[in-house]
Length: 156
Ligand SMILES: [Ca+2]
Image (cartoon, rainbow, N blue to C red):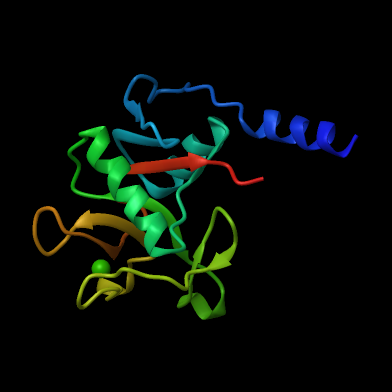
């Protein structure tokens, strides 16, 4: 009985229907990520992933970051940066959390000098080649700017 319930939950969580104005502008990678090449604000990206039964990506370990980099490379999508679900929230606005899970950002891969909260207006975490091509790092950036983004399968 318990396994039937688990199966149902997994089935519901597994629903992924690519829809909306970004339809056709995404690449689904073999390891379950979805990379969008249509630039979106952080909020638009978060909602797009949710509407497709997925979560805007959270990166909680070096292994997960390696998997995200692999997804970006395999997508062959060339964007300046890609949104994650990392954002400043709570604790006076200075602490980063993964908004998709509500958990604090512990593992991090910020570029040297980042996060700098430039102009006191950079509340969302993007992944990009910051220092040099082929080297993927994190940067805090204004949430209202448009970036590519990465969705991942929802963790139930
Ligand atoms: Ca920054």
